[in-house]
Length: 262
Image (cartoon, rainbow, N blue to C red):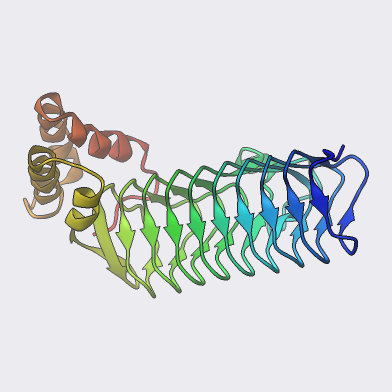
């Protein structure tokens, strides 16, 4: 189904079964598979491939040579009907790749709203990206990676499969992330290590002084107290009662499977 208000360039291929909503623009030499749905006012510049069971929301801007919903690179994948879901108002720049999920990993690769995926970023199978994240040029997420809201991943950075990047994290360019990065932390290096709290990011997003001080205190407890995580967790729980923002640390540590960067 193609809405009458959509524009499809004569050189583009839209296979039968695809759903193209109002105001969508499909530029020259794009290919859209039969199980793809594209939300209202989304723009595909040119030479874009969208395949598989893929749902893209409204007001997205997708640049040339992007590939979304293609077969993933997991050797266990055997053609199962897995999917890609992308929210609204994302900017997906040139040569970005987003692969479909796997049956073993939750069956979906998911991207939220208002994200910027810069040139040549790679989102592997079963990744989950929140809202308002930035992946700079050539950032690479291995399979099953989760990225919290407002996270920034620098250019040429690689994130190991099954790692978790917390909300409001900033990972510097050319880093190798092999363990989980707790929320609000600045990480850098190969392998990435912590370099303090992302205070500038918190200021820009409206965190008040009290919240900033609480986050800094929690960071110092985790990284500078000399205590083990088992010793730190009860203290963080107590801090979170007075300062709810600290609950982001306690929740993250409870979910962490690969251990946190040190």
